[in-house]
Image (cartoon, rainbow, N blue to C red; front, side, top):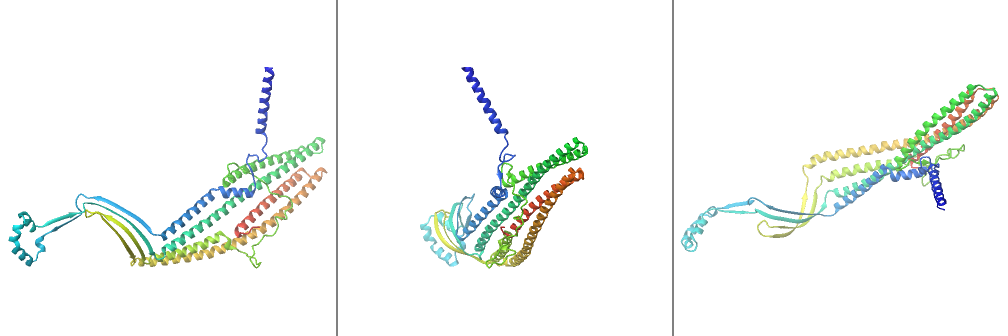
Length: 480
């Protein structure tokens, strides 16, 4: 009985171990790297959330928002408290009083008449002191404290302009974040379609390898029958070795692109991707571009106002204008009012008092250098306006260029599709003629190579069209 139980336990352990090993060694359904399978949109969402540039951009937006709030506090009074206590090695104020210097001749004559009377009333030492100099000293130690509030009444517009500049800085940080989004999306698109191209070319190699296997079987049969030369079989094997070399290069490149894509998207594992349909039906890919239209139905060829690049240029002009006004404001008079409550005991007794005050500051000599600074800011403002015009023209050229690129890529894809059809028919004919003995193995393998090249060209044309469409969307803000 005990032996039976032992055998059952051992069997259970062996079955569990085998099941675990099967789970470990079984191929993953979600990709060879064990990573999750992603679509292009999922990769973009991950990149926009986790990319380092996006995280930095969001921190810059938060910092700009705090700077705007900081500038708003300048509208309110500034309250400050001061306090100081001190002790010196001797009194800080000292003066000597000589009574003889303070008396006029008439006063001296009157005191001479009163001298007998004062001699009878005052002690001799007091009488002696009245005629000699006296020394007074004060403020050897003390405490000073106070609280003051100052409200700016007029600062030449610096506070208002400072708040406008802070709000402008926040708007700029949002636009820069949008540009970071576009850059990150462009990186994801670039790596994604590179990976699509490599995976599609690997599929092409698989079909080529399968085709070569079929040709090899036919050649081996023909060689055994004595109707074909052994050299034909060698040519097929050499071609198979070339396919293996190509597959190795593509696999290594694919692994590297996955790592780059994972870094851009902030993923902890290298992602597998879902391959889009690249069948022979390419009518959707050759559809005309969608154009942005106005309220009246008119076509807007260059909707620059929708682009963050153009909006940043406008903000730079606005910032230069505000900075010129700020330079003017620095040279205007400033007026502030305030109130405070203070305490000191410098005269050996506590003294409390409140006060109100007004302060007016009028710059005089500052206008000498300030006039040059204002002119410099005016030149910088004009430079920003010229830059806006120049870059706006470049943006319009980019719109036209990307539109042309899409049209060209569509034509290339249509040509590549036609080349695949022609190469397929050529391979069919060459295979039939080889079987009939009217063509050589070199001709057949050349036809197979032409088909592979045509299929790779179609893949490249398809990927180039996707990149061109994305560049057009980014250049115009148009969603096709």
